[in-house]
Image (tube, rainbow, N blue to C red; front, side, top):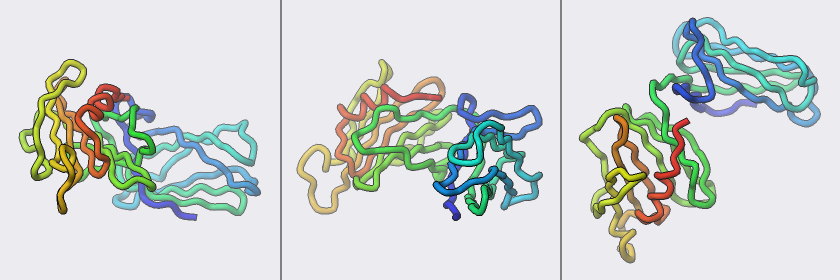
Length: 225
């Protein structure tokens, strides 16, 4: 079995850690499928550049069926292929391993039905965590940007309103579709952004019909770990 490409992020207060030699280690759970019995082995290699092979810590005491805790050690950042084997079963996935020198804002209070869907880097230095649902059209993005960038990408036709997030001045932008009955071609979209401690934080939604009043509690409940 082969899984698609994902991202493993290492941040200052995230779940992984950097070793003195620069290697990156993160806890990684595995589950053997029903009927699969055997000791788990893990191997991996970097695909985009030369690097030492991946290492894995596989502790004793979990038996040869069901759950197995492990620690995966990536010698470097980059694109890595990881393969786990147990008995006759094999699982391979490819993941991008990245270090980010700041903690990301993460949503802890979400509209019903939304869940974490992944991370985007197409607006660097901004990093975006994406929340969505297979049963809901639309998504919520939580964006963290170091510094105070002047170029704020926005949707056309947004109406700006003053707001406050945890006592800090904020700006909420809503499409006309949010303020009235949407006309053909209008976009259901909006954003809430503010500056704090050398960063700009922004919530962006499309297709969720969220008002400024609904975005503010999400912003005020963000976690940074």
